[in-house]
Structures are given as C-alpha cells and as structure tokens.
Length: 185
Image (cartoon, rainbow, N blue to C red; front, side):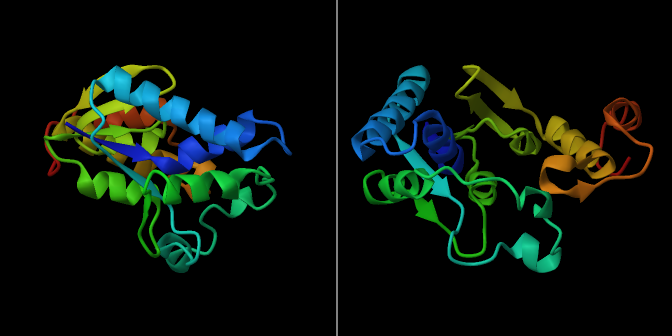
C-alpha cells in the first residue's frame, strides 16, 4: 500500500504548532514525528508526499479569481516556508505546476493507495482514506464519492469561497442527493 500524503497540511500544522524563532530542527522533528506516526498507523513506509505549487497561480484562481479570496487576511506562519523546503528537500515532496496537493492526491488514488489528509474535500475520491489527526481509517465507495461531490456542489464551500445554491445547506443537500443511487439520477 502506498500512502498519498497531503504535505500542505503537514507543513501548516507543523508551522502553526511551533513558536516563531525556534531552531528549524524543532520543525524537522515535528514533521518527522507526524510522518512516522502515519507510517506506523498504516504499517507501511511507502509514500508520496504532494504539496501545492508555490510558484504559479492555481488553475482554480485563473478560472475563478475569487477562489480562496476570503483567505487573503490569513497570516502565514513564519516557519511555513522552512517546512515546505524540508518536505521538498528531505522527504522529496512533489509539486505539480498550477495544481494543489489535493489534485495530485485524487489523481493518484488507486486500489493500492490510501489518501492521508484531514481535508474533507478528498472524501469525494473513492478508495481508502486516513485522517492523521483523528486516526480514522475509512473507505469511500464510488457512490459515496459522487454523493459527496454533488452535495458540495449544492452547498458550496465557504472555506474556499465557493458559493452553492442559495437556500441549500447540508441537510437539504443530503435529502436531495443521499436517496439517489447513480450519477444519472
């Protein structure tokens, strides 16, 4: 089994958990601890780590300039770049131009991989998943993935500044989508 790891979340969680000005080795130890705990929980050390492209604008922002515009005031942790450099240089994290880590996790999911993230958006991708914070290991079926995708289309995603259909929240979306058994329906 190959673990597909969301390196963005590893970097952000590490950079926000370690006070600014610390020795970078403290950051490295925290990253190593997180990754080792994932390897131990899933009983494998075969992995690919993906991070979002930092040099090019995401294709989503090129299509929709308001994508994640609501995050403009979020202060990036001081140590974030150090974490990304370490993931890239030591752990060989992969970045794909114009894409986010989520995209690569989804593209590379097979019956021989497990997506390792805490990002709910990946629950639209069928296959095995592992949440490295809740330690939850679970499977998403093809139907569950489709249902999640279409519910998100109706609800929207406030964290990414994506608007859904006015008047439709999680309960109403579930009432519409969860009774359907095929994508055509």
